[in-house]
Image 1 (cartoon, rainbow, N blue to C red):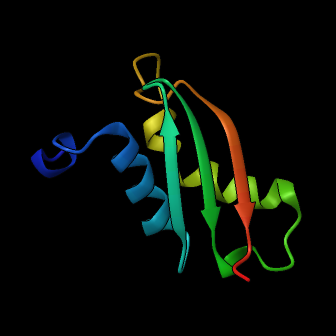
Image 2: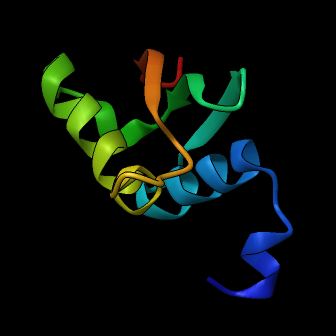
Image 3: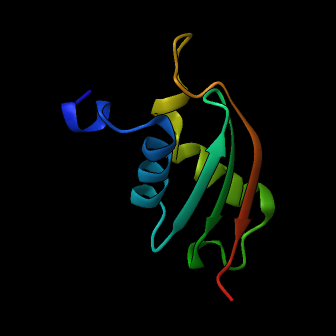
Length: 84
């Protein structure tokens, strides 16, 4: 992990991972440090089923959720929206 990434909060790391993985997305992240609530807005979700939108987000978070010492333990709430 680079020094730049390690100085970010886990919430900022989640936001950065999502926004760099999903085109034209904006992410809002909250939580208690292990369980997170995430809202993602992206035109990339247009026409996709809920499960497919969630898979895009989880793919972006794969590295942060992998392994027994992963910084992200669970996503308590995930909302995926298309911009109005």
